[in-house]
Length: 252
Picture 1 (tube, rainbow, N blue to C red):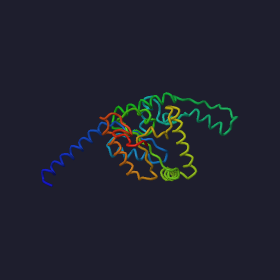
Picture 2: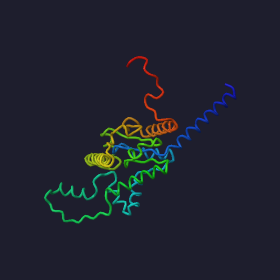
Picture 3: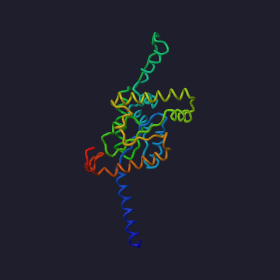
Picture 4: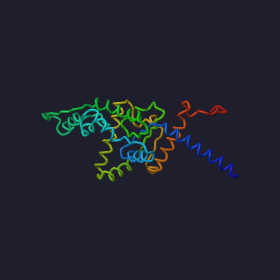
């Protein structure tokens, strides 16, 4: 290979890299939906760090509390939940003693509807800001129609999620088991009640990854590759599995 050939090849490589960077810069967000204990939150942190993008996770609660003029603790009560503190207290009374009269005054300064309206605004503002990794909060539904967003679902076998929660949160097996079921149920009911979708609906996602099969860094690599590939298609019309393929030569 001559020096001229090598120079031309290097120029083409640099041009390709520049095109990929330009396309990637046009992507505005990544949404991360996760089963509790699957490591989805940690993956989101690593993706954001690798890209140099802003991470929006608990920040949604902070933004909502500021928008509503309430404490973070009050806003936290509604985070990815259908039931607010009133219904939870009522349920706990019913579990402990169904006939017990409730004489304790319950005062709230916010409501689930106000929280969810503020949540939707926070997610849309994060999208408008661009270059953001958004964890949960119905973002995979709220941003479903935007082509410049990559949607990822993180899952793992239950036994591995159990071990993860026990180790990361310092819980015994029974407590970790109960917490996983509680959080999964809350998130499922939240998405169904607020957006009429189920978090396990695979059509909500561009990529589904299993942390029981791949390590976290490999999954980060896959997400970045998917982001790059989706970015490269922004200038093309929406395609599908048959895009660019000829008809079968024979009747299938």
